[in-house]
Amino acid sequence: MNGQNKGAGAPDEVTDGIEEFPLPEGVALDAMLEDGADAKPSRPAPKPEVADLAFTGKRVRSRTVDLAFPFEIDGRIVDSVTIRRLNGFEIAELAGVVIKADGGFDRYEVFAAMTGLPAPVLRGLDQDDGVDVLAVCQDFLPRVLATGG
Image 1: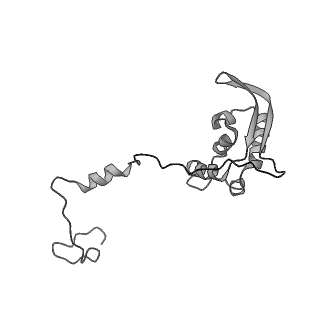
Image 2: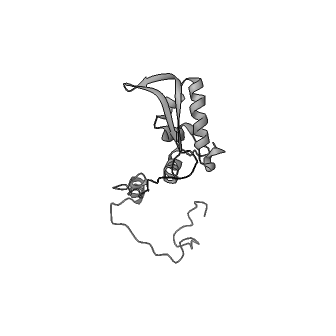
Image 3: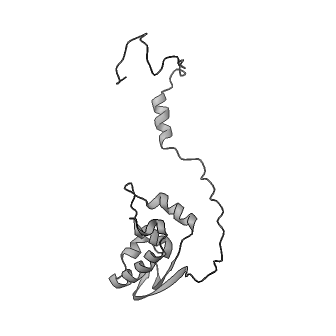
């Protein structure tokens, strides 16, 4: 229809045969739709249960990197960083947060989940410590993320 008004009584291919339902007086549909556009559910959906598995086998699921340049944060000294593999549910949760519109992702946000340290802290590591920590993180990325981003 290209937004043109055909005039009263003119047939309309989109609404032909559809009855109109008037809203009560004083109700503005646009305002109703606009108000609900940003509405959040009244309570968050419960998270599914995730088993804490005791993995067997020879593959390592975590590694600790000793830092050449320890640092203090929030009143505690950090002299090592433990990196762990994430489970499938953790990766799925992160996907909704860190995947960018172009399909890439911020590796530091994923690495933060793997280390328990905030992404800004990981970005602030000494260059040599950063290389060591991020190399282990990279090794622990799931295959789906290891080549992307």
